[in-house]
Length: 240
Image 1 (cartoon, rainbow, N blue to C red):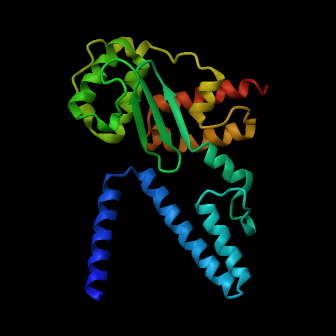
Image 2 (image 1 turned 60 degrees about the horizontal axis):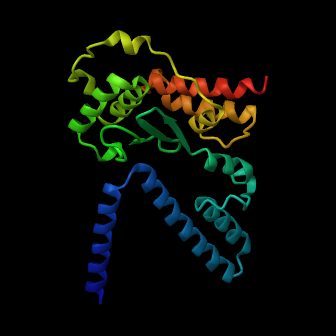
C-alpha cells in the first residue's frame, strides 16, 4: 500500500508539473489561489468542529478571499469588500486595433493577444510561431500602425532582443508620424480594466497601477503607456 501511495503521489506530481509548465502565469496563480483557499476552508471547518471558532473565522475569511468570495469581509483590514471587488473587476486591461486585441493581466503583468482580422484571424498570438508573428507584423506595418505597435509590445515581452534581428521598416516616417486614434469612453474603461461609471479616484488609481507595469522607464511599452494615459484623460474629462 505504501508503494502504491508513493507511485500515485509521483504520478500526481508529474501531472501537476506538466500542467503548470504549459499554463500561463496568471492561470498558475489562479490555481494556486484556489488550492490555498480550499485548504484554508478545510482547516477552518476542522477548527470549528473542535470549537476553535476564532481561528476558524480567520482561516475561513482568508480562504474565502483567496477563492474570490469578496462579499465576506476580512478582519483587521486585510482586504475584501469594495476594494477587493474593484481589483477583481479591473484585473484585465484590453486595447484593440483593427487587427489585434491585446490583454494585460494586472496581477501577473503578462500580455496576451488575439488576431481579429487579416492573416491568422481568430488565432492567439501565443499560438503563432516566430515566423508567423514576423509576417503578421509586416502586414500591420503596411495597413494598421496601431496594430503594429501592439504587436511590437507583445514581441518585447515574448522575445526580448527581437528588434536586433528584425528587418528595417521600409517607411519609418509613416509609423513615427502616426498619432493615437480617437478613444471612446467604453474603450477607455477597457484599457484601464474598469467597469463603466468608475469614479475619478478609481480611474487615477488604475492609471497609477498600470503605469508602474507599462512605463518605458520600467522596461514597458511606450505605446501601451500612451494608451493608458489617453484612457485616463478621456475618463477624467467627464469629471471636470
